[in-house]
Image 1 (cartoon, rainbow, N blue to C red):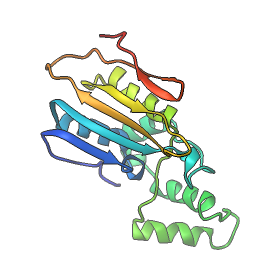
Image 2 (image 1 turned 90 degrees about the horizontal axis):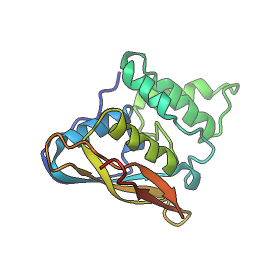
Image 3 (image 1 turned 90 degrees about the vertical axis):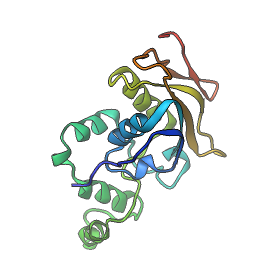
Image 4 (image 1 turned 45 degrees about the vertical axis):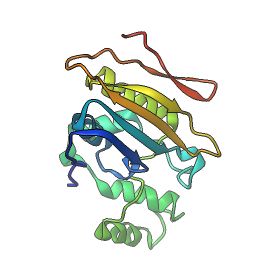
Length: 185
C-alpha cells in the first residue's frame, strides 16, 4: 500500500503545484501540509481542472471516494486507478487483449499518473471538508477559478496565526472566481 505524502516543517510558505492529483492519498497530504505550516504560514495550491487537460474523458474523483480511501487505506487499490488511466487516457478498452498487460506495466513501474481528477468545484469541496469536518486551522485567503487559458484551480490557504482559532470561511463560486466567505468568523 502506498504511504501518504509525508513532509516536514515548519514552513512559512509552501508551493504545491500539480502535486495533489499524483498522490494516492490526497486528503492525508492536505492534513500533513496544514500541520507543517507555521501559524500564519501560507500554502499555495495549484490543481489541474480535468475539463481543460488530457483528463477530460475521466470521471471526477468524488469527495466520498477520497474519504473512503482515507478511512480504509488497506483497501486502497492502485490497480483500479491505473485501469481507469489505461481505459480513458490510453484509449484501451478493458475488453482488449492488451488491457491487463498495460495496467500491470504501470503498476510494476509505479508510474506517476493523475490518480485523482477534479474540477475547481471539487477542489473547493475538498478544502471545505478539511476546514469544516476536520477542523484544520487554515482558511482560504485567495483563489482563482480554472479557465481554458488557466487550466487549474489556484487557492492560497493561510494557517490561523492563533492556536485554537477555528473560524474559517467557505469557498464559493461567483463570476468564475472562487470567493472566500467570512461568515463563520
